[in-house]
Length: 114
Length: 115
Image (cartoon, rainbow over all chains, first blue to last red; front, side, top):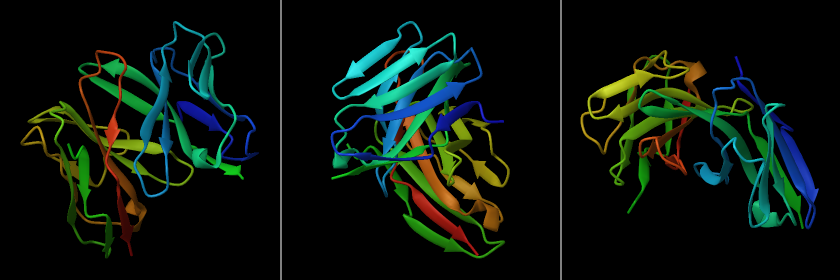
């Protein structure tokens, strides 16, 4: 049972272009939606996150758009750079007892061509 | 701070062998967890711990054991390795999840191959 669906699986963008990765979730109890970035041979690292009481969050070239009614959220990377080439995971989170659990999407491998 | 460290980086096992993947963190985090990463499946939670002496199962716990005797260490034991356990394993840690922003810090991973 995949609670967070992510697309596309892979994405190739020219330098300077916009990269868009989409995610959809099923459980309305999720209350925190982070994106993690993973470079080859490394562990994932938090990139940006949003809570469902806002529709958009921007940090530099990275923006999360959030649509609570549609249960969808997306990551936009403006002016994409070759250094952005990595695998991106969306996640959805809820607090279960004393632990906040993360449910990850399947990942998107982004390649930015120079 | 070293953050989250994992050993070994690579391991090859034969079917039926057992081994322990080591994980340590020096950030005094209460929460620690183990994930496995497989192509096209994202990261799936194996086991987690909310403090020393407290562990619980995640989404895919079968074939794995954990224990947490100290705040710093959270080893993952494979009891009898199977080819289906070929994967990249990540350990992560965090403070309790009651505040924002919430971040899990991941180790560099262990790539395990079972033949």
